[in-house]
Length: 139
Image (cartoon, rainbow, N blue to C red; front, side):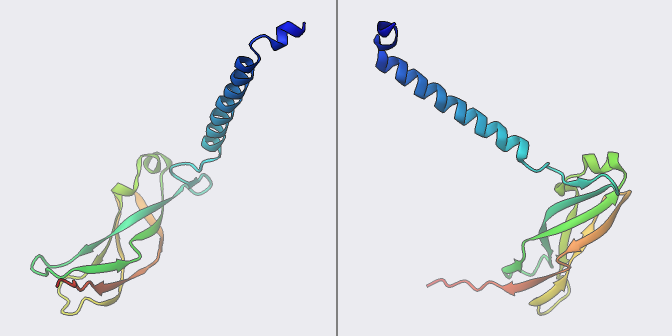
């Protein structure tokens, strides 16, 4: 019995350590996947969908000034039919600040949202963004 345990002891110990390490890595990855939030957080009770959408800037084609927009993302909560919401992604929703026709596009401006048909905007956060000029420091 003693030879059964001590014969190739270090190989057996290394095998046990490697098996334990492999089990730990696989188990921790499976646990993370089951705890992760769904890609499209929605409430089944009222058929709503929360999306994080980038804020685009619409300005005149002749206006070549560099602008900074803060925040760069907006949280959009929409309501609609469940089958439409299941197919909806952040790429389908346009959030933008319109700066065309303004001589001084610096300050706080309201956001606008374009949504696909049969989807209603429920909440937009933030409702305004801060726009500032970016000055280059070329020497």
